[in-house]
Amino acid sequence: MNKQIILKEIKENTFFWKFYFCWSRGYDDQKELNIDEVLEVIETDETKAYEWERSFLNEAEIEENPRYIAEKINDNLNYAIEFQEYEINFFLNDIYIGNLGGHFEAWFFTLEELLAFEKYPELFLLFLPMTGIVENERLILKPFIVKHLNSIPKFETHSEYIADCILNGLVMESGFSEIEGVGITNNQNHSVRNVEVYPRYRENVIELNKILVSSKIP
Image (cartoon, rainbow, N blue to C red; front, side, top):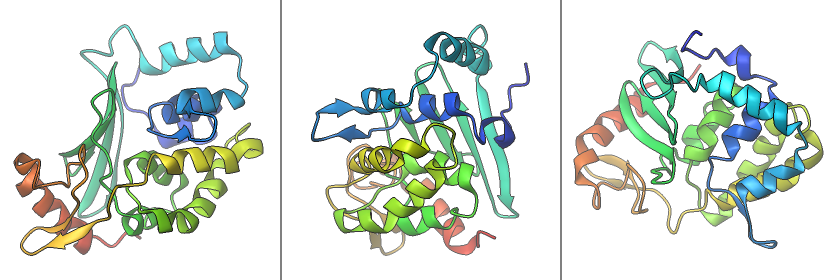
């Protein structure tokens, strides 16, 4: 099996997006449901879903040869998303920016940075769980999430509800700020951009901030 996943493979793939968003930190705060329980509203054949997941991840080789999505966005910016057995790792220009899993590191992209990818639905949805917002940005982001969820078969009936639950997991305790000499940072635990708590990421964050400012997403 080809280790690289092409975007066409996941574009309108209900199995993939249900699987993918189960890794996010979303939840239903009213019913006290985790995101995997929330996504049960998307009815799929569980046997077929299990078989698809095993085949998609190529489970026999995942530890040594994980599958991945990787593309060049423009001359200055590329990304890779690597599907390991217990986590999904994210990279920009080969620099680690976080992961989804048990020991997650997220809240990397600002709302403005995420919306720069809005013309690329698959990329927008892939980066969505790695985004951090403050409470008053919910209303700005929600219509974009609903729009792109509506393009996924079986999601359209529940897109408003799922969007609300995903947004719950994106809200940070406080927003992003700028530090002179570093650029955009935050003080959120479990975020690569929190250079005060995680100084080991400082040089990478400086480099990525320069790249994100100079790279105009077409």
